[in-house]
Length: 164
Image (cartoon, rainbow, N blue to C red; front, side):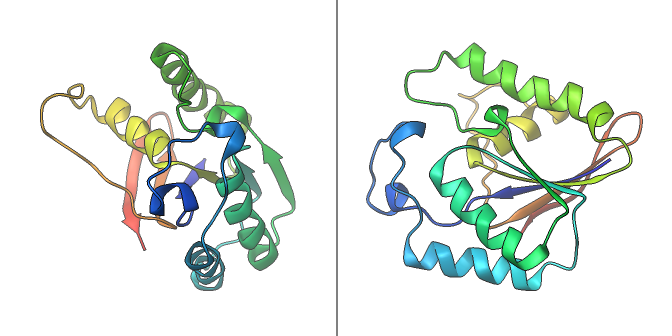
């Protein structure tokens, strides 16, 4: 399985420093829409399936990628959503773990593009590399409309990180 994790493009909540839940996300900025369209133009891949978070900023990013890449299947997966303001931390971690443990079998032999969020991508990275928990001062950041590629063949392997 080839997994392309895409962080959504620039969001209104981020640029306006708003605290929003996953249910009331105001979506992308005009710059964000441009970023998503540009990402679709520059990617040289046709995923077997594009899976997206249900959050508005991820949906809008995915819509631009779907228009450009024309994947044969699209799906929505709640597990890809950002940690929500009222969600227990362990619930979020369980969602990330569910993707890492069930998707290799579900999407075996396929190229999957997943439009998600920085928090999700950070926790995938931290989980797979066993990075110490927050509070250590170490950070990994993912840019808007960036792609991080993982491959699963008996175990996870990082192929590329934060390509913009």
